[in-house]
Length: 73
Image (cartoon, rainbow, N blue to C red; front, top):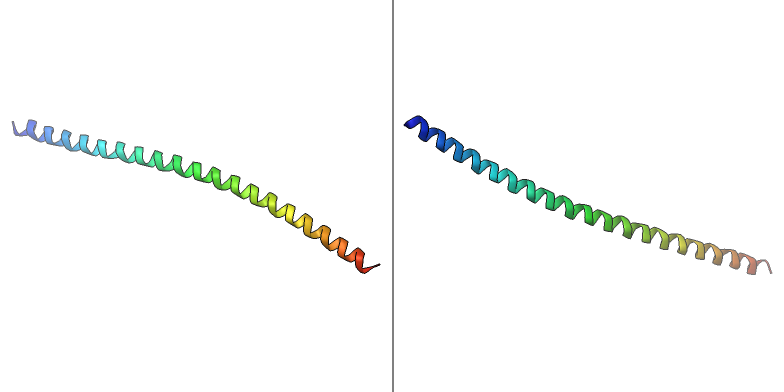
C-alpha cells in the first residue's frame, strides 16, 4: 500500500510542477507579447524622430545657404 501512496504523492507533485510550468509559460508569453508591442512602438517612434531630424537638418542647411548668399551681396 505504501508504494501506491508514494506513487500518488509523486504524481501529485508532478502535477503541481506541471501547473507551475504552464503558469510560467503563460506569463512569459504575455510578457513577450507586451515586449514585442513595445518594441514596435519604439521602432515607429524612432522612425518619426529620424524623419523630423532629417527635416530639421534640411531646413538648417537651407538657412545656412541663404545666409551665405546674403553675405556675398
